[in-house]
Picture 1 (tube, rainbow, N blue to C red):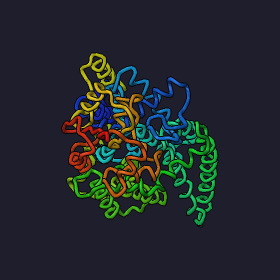
Picture 2 (tube, rainbow, N blue to C red; picture 1 turned 30 degrees about the vertical axis):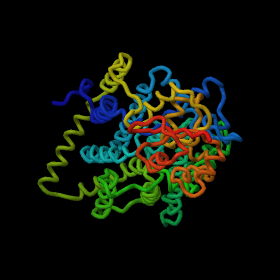
Picture 3 (cartoon, rainbow, N blue to C red; picture 1 turned 45 degrees about the vertical axis):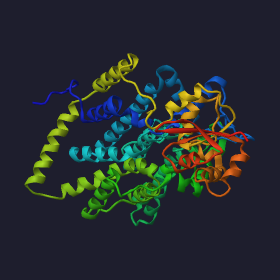
Picture 4 (spheres, rainbow, N blue to C red; picture 1 turned 180 degrees about the vertical axis):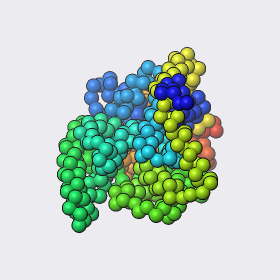
Length: 496
């Protein structure tokens, strides 16, 4: 006999939340700090809080004249700075871990609303979660992942006629545009739902035409409202152009690792998600709707172009894959298939009566307590980042302009700014094509690199020890090695 409410039992959604949240908090939180961009975001947020203004010009590099800077993630940076001031880097890691767990908790709830086989829903969500790990970092783009799910769900509910909550989208956009440039994916999604209504206009069924016209009108009005709402930010309408300027920079897209295409030579959950999707679509007799087809084509193209978009594709593909797989399963028969359906029905009934916010809240409170007592502690990995080199810098009187590894730049901003200002860091879009070319020329000691060093009056260099550039400098007489460890080497220019 099934009880009416088993609040003491965690639901499958609760268990997914707990698995992600506790797994990252207790053992893998360091992975969220693999990229030191977290550091400059924190310092930018602190500057905003201290100055009560949004920076319009670069504050972290020594370049003159000062470079214009569109700090489009300013609200995320303020949030990160506040958390850092309260609980340090560990607090930042735990916060983004919570956002990730919440994202896929909400995705599972969205998938479950399809009322399909619960076992398939679990499998699809787990695979989407695994595929998205490729870009799990303590950085502002996690806000985009979180906001994409309710945005997607609201559009799905409206398209299916379940309920109309389109009025929430402008509110979400108001926050999204100030948190991260991924707000563009929200506009893309809204545009796809809008365009997918057009084929119904050619239908012979007058009822289909009428319904499509109504939806097209409502979605169009929502789009027209969201556009001016997106302009409510420190940079006005210019923010609408920023993402397009970024992706149109071919040099940047071809030389920054997270913008490059995924590597299929290694085991990849994304590859398996894609193969499963192809298999299910090929085997299922159910045709994709125009909307689902466009969604898959657009976001798959993005994920094949750049590894950072795999997370978006995983979220978009999950409900579509579930619908197709569920239809394929219901269209199949046999002892094993029938047993699977029966088991899924039983699990689904129990899951409907289980769960509350009890277990997630207990987990959050437990982790918060562990952080406060320093039982959980995360920082940038000294085996991969120039932590010890920075400690050396603190004991020296090095002054003047530096040249630095761009991977080190973000950490140097976090650990040494404003005492030291960098040559280059993770804000490649701000530095622009010419400075990126100059940076690449120096690190590859290409022809003319010494002239670039002279141009910027660089008198010391901090660079990755295990790099051709560092090994090259060791062989030169005009650069003296003053610090060396397995991660970073520091060179000073010999006085002539």
